[in-house]
Image (cartoon, rainbow, N blue to C red):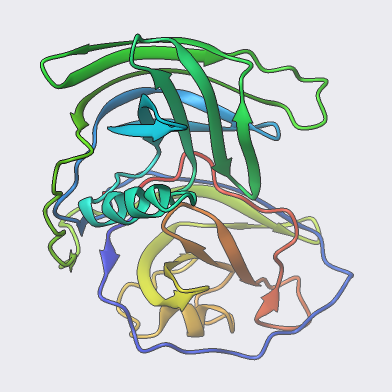
Length: 295
């Protein structure tokens, strides 16, 4: 996806609601996002997580010592986004108090016995939560402070909530007595020297608008979580200081402006199209990202 630039001054536009518009959006974005996050403690992971018929690729893993009812365990969290030292520190503190640790969504949490058998797993992503499920198999090997393992749970497509996973991981084990270093504040930008690219078609009332330009920008937090906006347009908007605002009013032809969190969860979508009577049309409906990541 495109490089994240410094956030423009937050701006809002009037939203026009209607039930007479059908939106079909298929977009593939290929590029690099430059978000410089320091203090990450994640290691390699490969695999997928399926929740409610949606699949997520998990590429990061962190492992740490845990305890339940006096029994020592090893917890492994696999996620699409990296877990910073600060986030892990807060999660461990919450679990120590009997609560649940929060990790970048989507994520899969595996709990193993010290002998290596999988005890149970939980997952969160796309608004779906699975907790304490034991319908899975896995193994973990611990040697010299490092864990390597694999785990899987078959997906039942006929289930009310289809769920499952197939993952492999390798990570340094964080000991319960270990003091994690404080995360260094994130440093953003400048944007990467990589030309953003996008391919896709935006249909409004059966009329196509070819999206040829894309940019990404930080925006004000939403729901107390870091947020960004992706701007897709027919015409070049790279020199505009408020592309999200102006694109919504048709300055750059057909446009789709998507607001989302770092985990790819979309909470807002505005569109502009020549087939629309009104500009800055709000269209959230059923819309989601696939394999959304940024670095």
